[in-house]
Length: 123
Image (cartoon, rainbow, N blue to C red; front, side, top):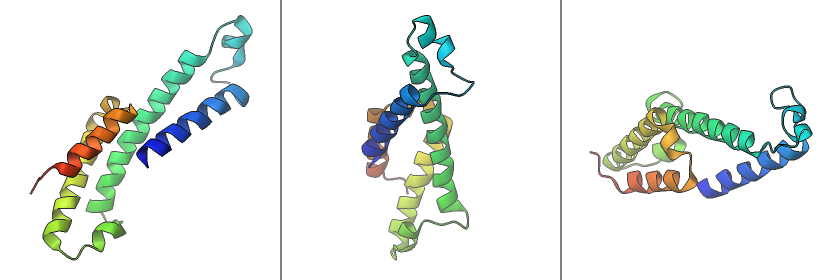
């Protein structure tokens, strides 16, 4: 699922960057109309978006465990010890994403992080 989301978003963003970019932030007059490529600017913007999204994801992971907006998947686990273990992993991975989103912008790094936390024993 992570791979599909990353890949599809990247493809769609790049497509829209090439076909629908008409705003004032990255005008064609700065790039294409001067014979330059806007690919580096697109890459940099995608990196920023990924970093912000990963940090927000970490915050959302905390919110779904620690606030009143609980995750139904966790709530349905009747074994409280197991639920606590899974929620603790979730909170710790969320913390990692909040504190170091730049380290997980790449798809491989993010999936490895998820696999690592999935195998951790934290309680």
